[in-house]
Amino acid sequence: MKPIMKKQPIYKKMAAYYDLIYSWKNYKKEVSKIKQLIKKYKKSSGYDLLETACGTGKHAQYLKDSFSITAIDMSQEMLTIARKNVKGVTFKKADMMTFNLPKKFDVILCLFSSIGYVKTYAHLKKTLQNFSNHLKKGGIVIIEPWLNKSTYIPGMPDMQTYSDTHIKIARLSAAKVKGNVSIIDLHYLIAEKNKDIQYYVERHEMGMFEIDRTLKLMEAAGLKAKFIKNGLMKDRGLYIGIKQ
Image 1 (cartoon, one colour):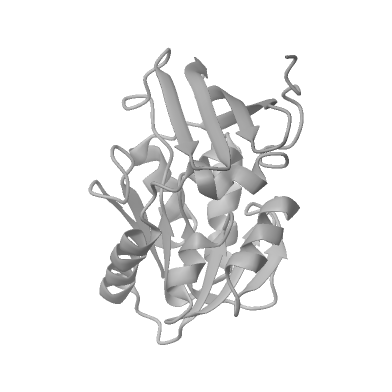
Image 2 (cartoon, rainbow, N blue to C red):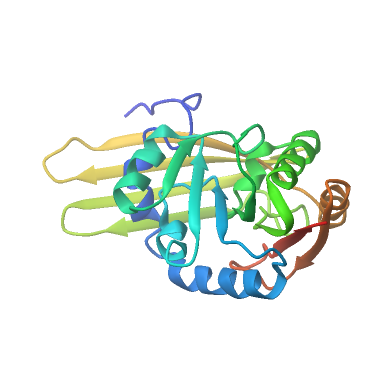
């Protein structure tokens, strides 16, 4: 079989299978930790929350009981699923680097390493400034980074699978690197009941940002910044920024 090639937008074809591939992810546990961090560090008094790169809305599902949520993502296909997954949340199609919303927030989240998709330090600087511009004084931004050069292992193969009575999915990849960018081609093989087997390839290019330089960019954007090593996933940590 010949794959559908790589220049398609990421998560366009695969959005329908995203929650199956990541069925192992404990969103409820992650949100519990996020709420603890918000309680510890947030200085503003409100509960307006913006989630950037919200995907299929699985974090928002456990946040909506405590916050008034606006959630944005670049993928219309992911947003369509998010709207089915979660009610009571305002979902909008927008880029985390350039969104311009008519309000400020007490909390801004950028989770599951989505910040890596901005790819360059110049774009990271612009994104952090945009986050800061949309935060109330005393508001908090929490960013879960992608791996950096010390934790990313080029050449390492990976496999994720999902199986139930109606569908089998296998996703394989091997890690590559070019400069400060990790390059991962995700090969999906999908067998669904009463359908032909599908084969897709998605290329994910993500910037590997070093901790010290990221903290400096956060400070330059008007955020009192710190890095917490013990984050939501192994080897990723979390950045905390408080709007000054």
